[in-house]
Image (cartoon, rainbow, N blue to C red; front, side, top):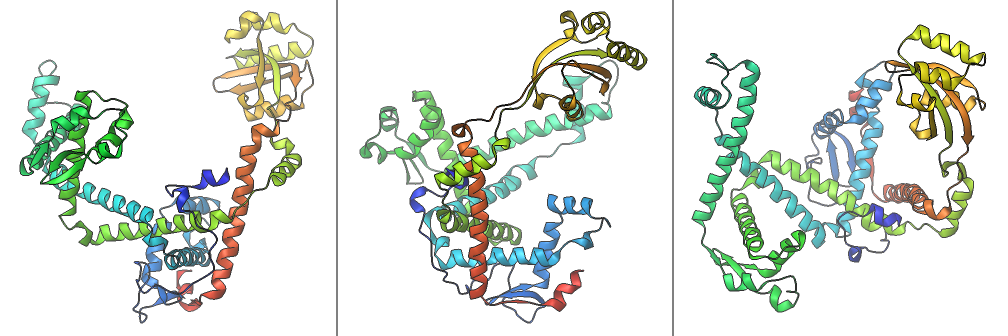
Length: 463
């Protein structure tokens, strides 16, 4: 069960058994690493080098993450200089060890990994394509703004829009022009392509088209390249509709995507330095995920007896919430609240005073709210109610604009939840702990095999 939670896109059929620690460096230097060993460096891992420049870039990226903000807020000196750069360097070294191991095991050549990389690259190219062909071609002039205002927004005798109106007009015009430009670009793509639709094949496709012969049929051609029925049927399966209108619309979308993909791929965006960097960062991140899912995860086994033992030792964590039967009197006036609280503690009638003075809807029932879960009570109120005895008056306690007086009518302790209801949560809890321990042990062994050198003098420059 824990493994099902951890898996990403990796199919179960691709899982491999535990692999021996076979480690040696890969000659293909990643963006973080440089073969020019004359450059200042902070660490060497096998034949790979973490240059000072690359480490500084990683540190700058670290400072954009929440983890740094959290550490900064917790540090006494409130300084970035308090960051533990050695610990961060250790994380980078461990990440690189996982990447090296994944490459040595051939995981970077796995079809699922290659497909994920292809999709990521294509999405980057498409984003750049949209900026070049659509976004950069959308311009809003002063005349556009004035014409829009006079035709759609003009009120009274004002000839020009206010600043607030101008902002709203610019947003509306930008959206309109963006859509117009997209349509123009899509039309130009279709005009430049030779598209042939086979209506007889399209008409014959249905929900029952499940034979291999149906899948192999060509439903369209784009510049003589076939679009197979299998591709269209996958799209139709998502919408669960097979009428002719839906089939034509879906095929049109499929053809357009293929045209966009082709246009994005032909422009050579992979030569762009920023895109190359983003691809490499994603490649490293994905290889780490693949390594964890394919190598570490299969080693994690959670036994039934471990789940049962954990449940017995931690029953307090797995129980229904405590419940309290309460009545309240909600007031806006602080002086009145104090007066009523004193009267109640002397034995005053709670129901009568609630009906007379409370501004809460429970007043019609004498202030009776009934049974409420501890999870629905504010923390400060819950702490006081848990200490109170039945019939005890608590408050007044401020809650936003109101002052509330509580009466604890009754208390019901939460019962332990049966094991079957919490088995999955326990399995995940134990699994996560074992996963962390297994990964740490694997990395510890890798560090014994791969030569790691830290340049203390260079690292000291970061403090």
